[in-house]
Length: 261
Image 1 (tube, rainbow, N blue to C red):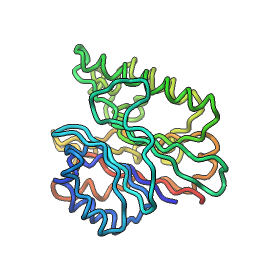
Image 2: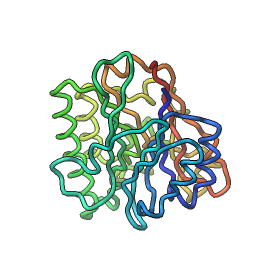
Image 3: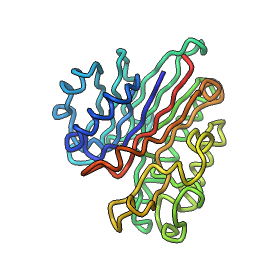
Image 4: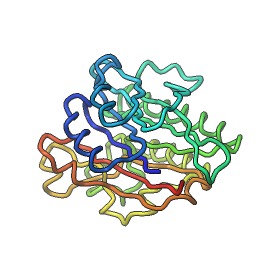
């Protein structure tokens, strides 16, 4: 089974890119973030024509997450349980692999950016991370296998950014952000991109300003986290850089994992 995550930075503006990538890549499941559209305006017919079902948690102008799947799925949650979040940043389903008897929770997130750090936006980011961690701990306590993926807006360490000095006052690299991310990892997750791909070749985002892509000034903020029983089935992890070089590209590029089914 192949699963890809991609912050498309407006699904309708980037639909041709999405079509192009899907036709070549053919993952079984796509986890999309930053849709910037409500569900009614999501390009479901285009997606259907390529053989995928669409499950959408959309929001006008901002945010939004979706799951595209060749097989039918059931959406279990569209927000973190027990957290009243007005923004469309979370969608959860379940998948089955032959090697694991339990159903696997597959969670797609678009974690708040949190900038500037001296504002309520940063407070919201940290609160969101704490609520996510509380929910994931509940799942872990029940020994449920889990995959969490998406745009985390977290630079886990200084090794995950081209210039740590440039991001010392950025919410994505803030000590409180990194602390909440470590709490999540320490529950028993593997950071797949870090684990499988050598540093400085595993960046997933290159900003538009200052020619970041052209200069190779990237950072790693799109992640796949898996519990141990899922990690054991990982055959391959790829950062697909090609779409970032396309004309009018998203500032993120897709990340794909291949699991033994």
